[in-house]
Image (cartoon, rainbow, N blue to C red; front, side, top):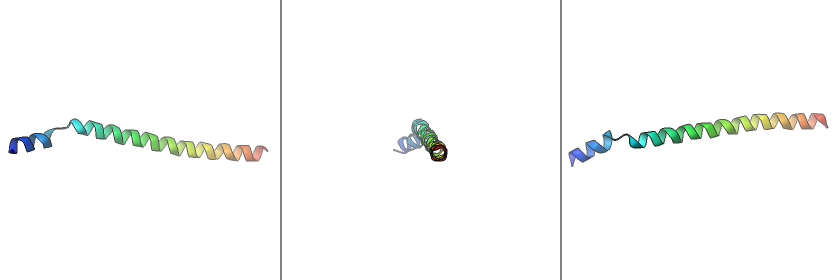
Length: 50
């Protein structure tokens, strides 16, 4: 039983998945921020043009 518990804690196969999830969330969040900033600039450009 002790060997199985130590093997479970030593296994790092799930750590890669967690890394990818965190990286993907960061990229999506950055994309939303960029979209918000660019969208606000386009909205100001359209309002001032008319």
